[in-house]
Image 1 (tube, rainbow, N blue to C red):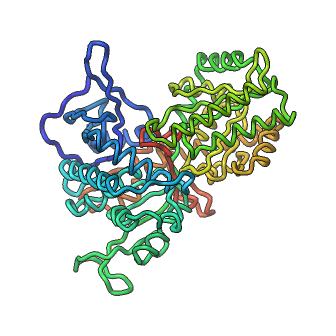
Image 2 (image 1 turned 120 degrees about the vertical axis):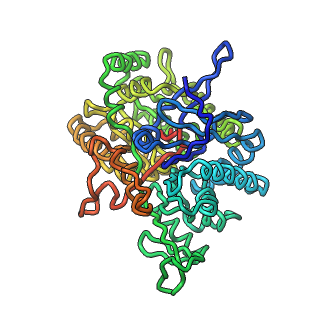
Length: 530
């Protein structure tokens, strides 16, 4: 059982995210409890939080629920309450119907409402006040994701002693798109309250730096931004004004590869993989898509390409099966309800037109699965389809690779997913080019075993070497360089196996040369980006 913390405690290391790393559960007798939420971010930060007596600030995931701070499995939990109006306007509104589509290249049109913006400011202020209240003097704070972009500046105004990091798990748009946002300058001001700002890809960091120059007029040099401050003791820029140096660069997030491989080695998981193939009729080829039901994931594109391959006679309907897992997401947002209707209509049409007695081309599953079942699906699939139209990283691609200890399987990966920067041995595609996508699927089906193995070995090495522990350590090292000497943390705790190595000199290291990252995610618990 989690232990309540009745006295106000201060912490040297604080993580803040929209959602907490625990889920509130109520049993049949009405007893309340908390279930730990597995995820890459939690896995990466647990060792650091325990070593530094850290706390996690976030929302419990249910409106109108107020909970006192408590401990859960060694993590200090500090809940921030949200009302029904907060959830509707800050979360479903501004975060997911304004920022999400804008930051994903306006695949869907963003909605701009002043009431939503006011709610976003209100909730970000609430988070900042809670963090300021519990953070130790000269402490270190790491704020996560697009829902909390105002928190760094709000926190700095209240607690200038703190060292603040921010990590954006979704893409950052080009300045021509970002400039559409009516509150573009205020968001930049919020982010520039941080000492270190992390992004998914090099392009995301570059787009942010361009936005800072274009909208704020600030000077940038490399990954450093000169932010003007009214502080006589601050360093002076080349223009002679006092400035604070902010670092903005990319850090590629990853997964706990070791844990996925360990699950894949379990005999019962391998048996389940065989059962899955048998339930599909043991076709020659099983293709798999795993996503949140989101318009950024390119689900319609892969379904269309697969259906056309069967219609064209390039794939015999009995020889292939596509399993599409589309976990529910933001079902109260109109665009997501429409997307679900469109996808299910397409699946029904293809199965009705092309299916035969005893076999349907597409198995469509609109619900989530536990990790063990997902690993069994990865082992059962000959081809993994990641056809995102825009994605920060897409950790599903890395999960598939980590699970394939047999060095088999083919990853088809969109060039618009951050993972494509690292997983270059995948079959890289432009999902908008349906013809080329069809050719790539056919190529993957026909790929010789030796080529599959060569590609997968290289992919697996990349994922193992650059795991989530290395990601968290690289970011914390950057943050630690900005911290006062009185408040150091030990970033090596995040990488207890010592897998982190210094950046190589051939410009192809984990940082590429800096680092990239991820989570498309609806919130930081969804770091699987699916």
